Length: 387
Picture 1 (cartoon, one colour):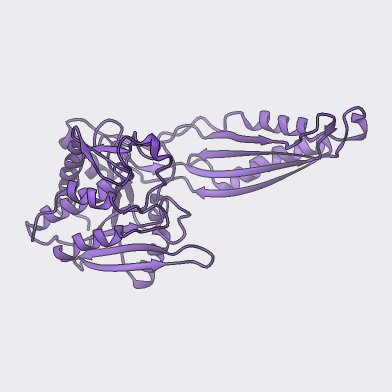
Picture 2 (tube, rainbow, N blue to C red):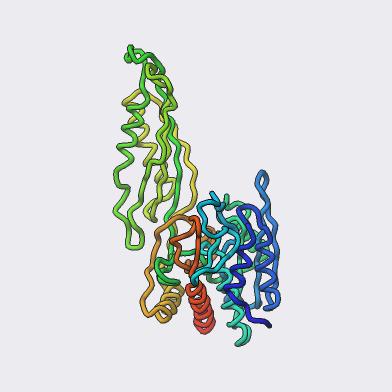
C-alpha cells in the first residue's frame, strides 16, 4: 500500500476541469486512490429527466456499523475571466507554500486530505465498523443528480450511514477552527404587481403598480426575528426591482422584484410564504392591484444539536488547535441539507476565504493540518461507544 500524498492528490483533482456538470475525470481520480486501500467503489452516473447526467461515487470499506461517512464534491464553479488569475485555474501550481486552482479551497483539497487520512488510519488495521465516502459532481449545480440522488440509491440498497462529516471550507483562519452544525434555509421569491397602464398626464385613469411594490418592499424589510441560540436573525434581502418601462410618459402595467430569505429554525418555507402572502394581500387590497408571488425553496434550515457526535468533533479540534472550535450555522447552503435527513452531519474543512474567487487557493500547511484532523477524528470515532 503506497502512501497517499494529499498535496499530489489535490493537484490531480484540480487538474480535472470539472465545472458542473462536467466530471473531466475527477471521480476516477478519487476512485483510483481508494481502490488500492480496499474500498468497494460504486460509480453512479445519475440523470433525472430533463437534466444533465452527473458522475458520483459511493465507496465503503467494512461491512459492520457504525458507518462513518465523509461527503464532498469534485465539481467546481466556472473560473470566470482567465485574465483575473495570476495562476492558471486548472494548473494546480504551488507558489510560496500555497496551492492555487479552482477547487483548491472548495473542496478538492479536503477530499485529498480525507483519502490520505484514511490511508494512514488503515495502516493500523481495519476499523471496528465502516468508513465510506460519498463524492458527488453536482453540489455547485442544481443538486438533482448528486448527493440527494445518491442518498436515494443508498436507501434502496438498505445502506446505513451513522454519522457524516462534510468537507466544505467552513474554517475562518485555520483548518478546523469552525464546525458547521447547521445551515440556514434559503428561499427566493419573485414578485409581480399588476396595475393598469395609462398616461402620466391622467393618473386617475391608471393604477400605478410601483407605489404598491414600494410599500411591499418597505413592509418586508423589517426584521423577521431576533435569532436563536444557534442561529443569527433571519434576513430578507431584495436583489432586484424592475419595471422595464422605457417611456417617461407612461404609467406601467406591471412592476417586478426579487428577494431572498435566509431563514433560521424558527421558520419553514410554508410559514414564510404565509407571512409574505398576508402582507401582500393587505397591500394589494388597499391599492386595488394584484400581487403574485412565486417562491423557490433552496433548502431548509437545520441543526445538528450538540451531543455526543458534536462533542467528539469539538474535543478533537480543541486538542489539534489548542482552542475550542466555533459552532456555526452561518453561510449559504451545502449538501449537508440532504444528508441531515439521513444521519447526524457536521461540516469541517479548510479556510474558505478564496472559494469561488480568482486565484482560489489553499495553504499547503492547512491541507496537511486538515489531513491530521481527519485522521484524529477517525481514531476518536472508532474508539467511542456508539451503542
